[in-house]
Image (cartoon, rainbow, N blue to C red; front, side, top):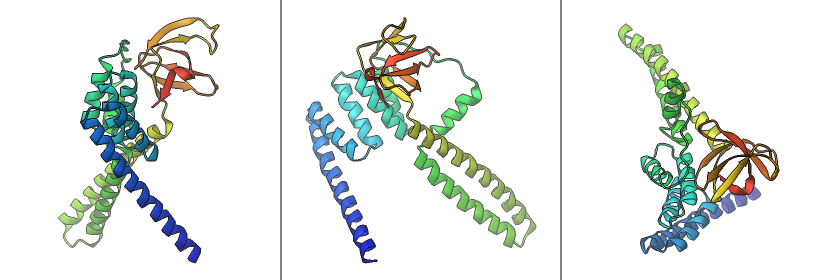
Length: 251
């Protein structure tokens, strides 16, 4: 018991120290950003991100690189912020602004309305947000079931039963959206081209045929990540090929 208590105290002390370090570093980074010292601000925000990635820190890093006119890194960090907080309109707006300053124009393939609707619904909140909503809906469902079981009046029991069914369906939908967001965050298959110009090859070798050229800031999806130096990627318009791993950075 004494050993467990010491471990808990150590863990709590470490957590408090980490939070304190993050707060003090954020003050330094915010101050540097306010003074338009974007190099210093970006370095400090990077240190904070290593201690614990958050949407706000990623967004601030994106803003630093945007002000430095480094659109590839700005897009990278905006994408990371959006991955953690998909419902943030400010992040989406700044990401679109940064994308408008890149060279490549990729037109996404047409997809069914239901697929677009599901994606839009899932992106309303983060995985944590959907999780919290699922718990709330489930508690309300249990309360409705209690009213159905113990209610004295027939109209109350019928209404409570109908509401319980609807709340259960909403709970399952919310849980499914949360699972989809959590899987997306864990998978991290998206990447940003960081090289000024990257040739996409037909095979994972320099001797492969040149298919097309991508420029910095373009988003790709990784299809095959099994090789050490090459990755197979696909674009939103369906084009695909092989790129050198060093030319991209995973979101």
